[in-house]
Amino acid sequence: MKLNKEVYKEYKTYPEKILQYGEGNFLRGFVDWQVDKMNRETDFNGSVVVIPPTQNGKIDKLNEQDGLYTLYLQGIKDGKAVKEHFVINSINRGINCYEQYDEYLKVAEQSEIRFIFSNTTEAGITFDENDTLSDKPQNSYPGKLTAFLYHRFETFKGEKDKGLVIIPCELIDRNGEKLKNIILKYTELWNLGEEFVRWLNDSNTFCCSLVDRIVPGYPKDTIKEVTEELGYEDNLVDVGEQFHLWVIEGPEWIKNEFPTDKAGLNVKFVKDMTPYRTTKVRILNGAHTSLVPVAYLYGLDTVGQAVEHEVIGRYVRETMYDEIIPTLDLPEEELKDFADAVLERFANPFVKHYLMSIALNSMSKFETRNLPSLREYVNRKGKLPKKLCFSLAALIEFYKGKRGEVDIKLADNEDILKLYKFLWENYDGTEAGLKNIVSTVLSYEKNWKMNLNEIEGLTDTVTNYLSKIEKLGIKEAIKEVM
Image (cartoon, rainbow, N blue to C red; front, side, top):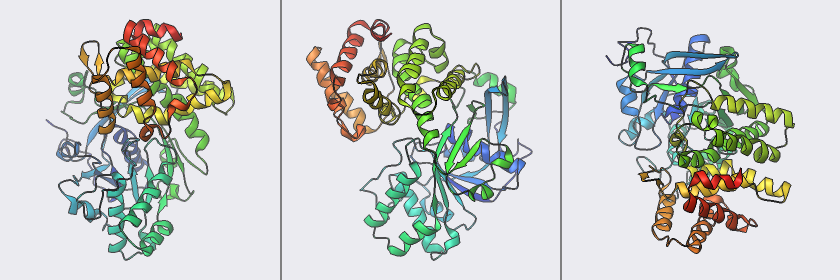
């Protein structure tokens, strides 16, 4: 018996108010859960239409289950370890815009649509000069959104009250501003006219936002027990931690339309999200990204295993307290309290957060999450941070695609994968060959936005660590920085 509206007797249909790009674990365990909670506890009365940002999505599974899925929240709540689950009833339907493009554009014609949310990973908010307005659909997420907004503009003849509130959840700095700027580039490329640009600026509200909740997703190791507990089959079970935080930089009036406060949600509408973002991205996400290649190559599979491990746990703590916190400007005690909370969340006894689920697009993640700490550490201390450099070396080794004799299923942009494939296939086994790999990776400005070889000593330091990893293995090599 599969979960659907026949099985879930409390099923309700709500007006479609939200268009969401992305149907992955995070959005379902974060945004869609909050919408469900607002529907139950406030007068929000709205549902979500889901669009996949890529062709390989869960839209068919979502529609088969009438948009329903079970969310487990497990972790520390009010000082206690709490495990609970709910059926989430906030997604009305999914539309595969790769097969139903006209249906996708019809959503723009619905006057009730008011909000747009997205999570297309750090690599998703990008400009693709090959996108055209006539594509069905456009390749990039901003291209798809521009076409959607233009169709809405034309449908309602530029009516001011038909603008939307657009809140991206991608973990990049000033995500709302970046998304808007790319859309404006498309308006120019596609010659969409001054009136449309004016409507974009005057009638739509682009917010920068910061999201924080660890969502490991589908519990593949325990799904049999979960199914027995639930009494029905659910191919979209999602698992997240109890902790959540959403910081939205935008006008106060938004919370009148999106009443998260009335549902007791930890959502902050602020004038400047910078202090929240910098602390969260560098400590929590930076620790995640620096941890993944080191712990995975060490032979560990989950974040929990890593922080509890004698060696890797110490490595993570020292990276956070000794190399990341010294680069931040909030009071040290506040930063250490946040780091303590992060480690507590990493060690959540209920959640198996697989390292490989964090490994997606690790190169762009290192650029946004760890490179700022590395550069600021050099700026303030006048020397390189050993553990962050070691993590970078481990990342280059990780993209070799092997853990011992087992293949690593790498997931990144095609250009990144091609670069590493070429470099490692042509590696001749020499020290000079390793330095060539390192210097080539560090000079890949498309990812780093600069040539990292220009950071004094970085090329040699990373090469040295990579050489140790290659010759001795990660377990011996890590002793160099402990």
